[in-house]
Image (cartoon, rainbow, N blue to C red):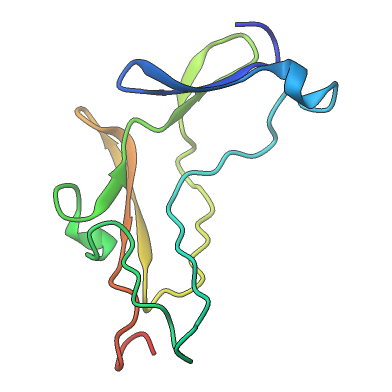
Length: 126
């Protein structure tokens, strides 16, 4: 890999590639990485959207029920792999509608997160 190129791999298969030529000189290294899920909430019915995140289950349901991203890690400028940080910052804008759990490293899943939620609920997520 040439310095400044970015690629995304899933299960050993590269599914995304961003060559450094696309970004001029201003993008040789990252200062922040983000993983997670996102929904669009236009409140078109005057309330929170009913769009589910993942399967619609909250993150505590764990892998198999909630949406997840496993084996989260990164490569440094010397192409050395490391797990994602142990204490990431979580941004959860509507915790009664959606949530996120960052789990301890696991032999099968590495560092991983689960996320999800049902969206609108008249009592919990108005």
